[in-house]
Length: 235
Image (cartoon, rainbow, N blue to C red; front, side):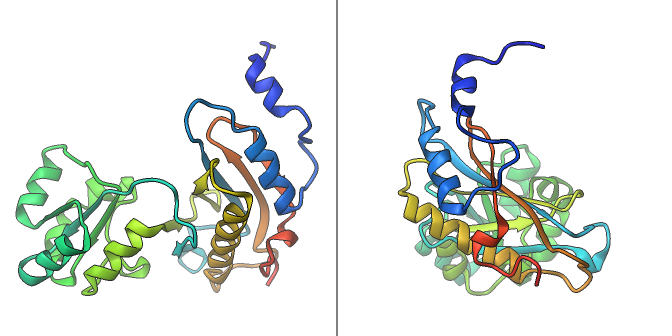
């Protein structure tokens, strides 16, 4: 078995692979071990008691993190006329219609969030095979198909995080930066966990929130006691 690099071995010191830590303990451990030369993203992984292959067990939603994500989000908006002007005024980075479709089909996808007004969806629908796999397809369930373009752009820029359960029932998200204070990370994590809890589908059986862990981009994972998230883990 190959030997772990010194930095990784050192970052794992003092962390038990089996212990479930209180949320505040876990946040401190992750922050203390974020030693990369860049501001690492703090990520959360939540294993849910669902099978997303069934329609009544799909988990999807959006959470507005109280302290933002710490990253600059580029927003593209599909809109025309007054709504296009509204999107630009709200701070959207890219605004267009047919021209934006051509740009995306040409291979240029230089944005992190995509918003559309409802009348644009027949046009945007042509991009399903391109935007869908990247998680960029506008969807009314997460507020990215809307006439309230200003709110959608502000939410995206201000820290709105979309989440969706993967095949194994796992939800991943970046919920801040290692440079955030412990308090800010705690608030963001609790807000995200609460949003996922409220998104519990009707078909979920048994324990909904099964396992939770957090880590920084280059750091080890730290397992969290779901009870310390202050959400209805089994509700």
